[in-house]
Length: 253
View 1 (cartoon, rainbow, N blue to C red):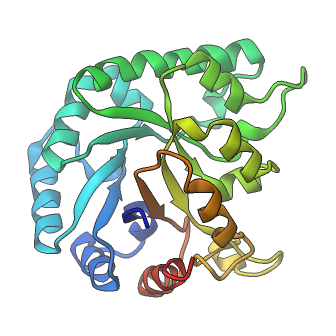
View 2 (cartoon, rainbow, N blue to C red; view 1 turned 135 degrees about the vertical axis):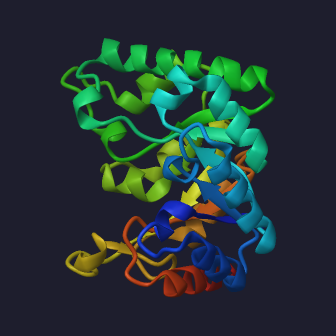
View 3 (tube, rainbow, N blue to C red; view 1 turned 120 degrees about the vertical axis):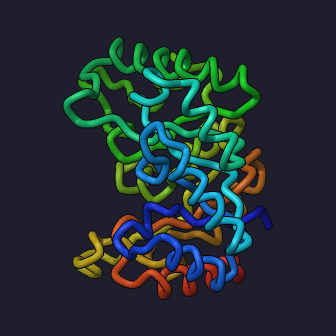
């Protein structure tokens, strides 16, 4: 089984971070994934404190999310932060609704923009890719799909495949895994609650306690170059429950 990580965005509502890291490590995870709010501004103190917390809990951070704004405006700083934390692969995670293209040409250009943003990252010896949500799978009026266009415009982009968002986007995850298997270098592992359940958690579920066929997906993902699987839940009500139940389920896949 590939290494298992935990996306720290899932712990954002359970401060302090040092306690959350202890919960995650105690549950059995050896790695975590960072996101923008953890890196501070341009002061090394936040990054050094985070690295010390990781070390105290026996955790490493092989992957991290960095905003496109930071990657374009301050690429050297993004690379510096990544290297201080031991991040080997950077994933750009999101584009705000008001900044999303509305046609095929725009999405292809967005892919090219990501391609360019990744040039300095790759030159520094780090991997670089895109992390999807659901909006990339909504077909445009001409029938094209943004996810295809992003990869067309960004031929060197890796893919951190968030499978539950693929499903919420109305797409077939197995088809997309097969289509871009060679680009998948990390996978977000999260689950979707049955319709009408877990409304206080935005309809998400702990891994293995929802409707996603993770056992089947694990079998299909085995043929990809994914280096790590990352547990995530966008709005959990109990951090320890999420961490413990998800890792217990994954051990049975």
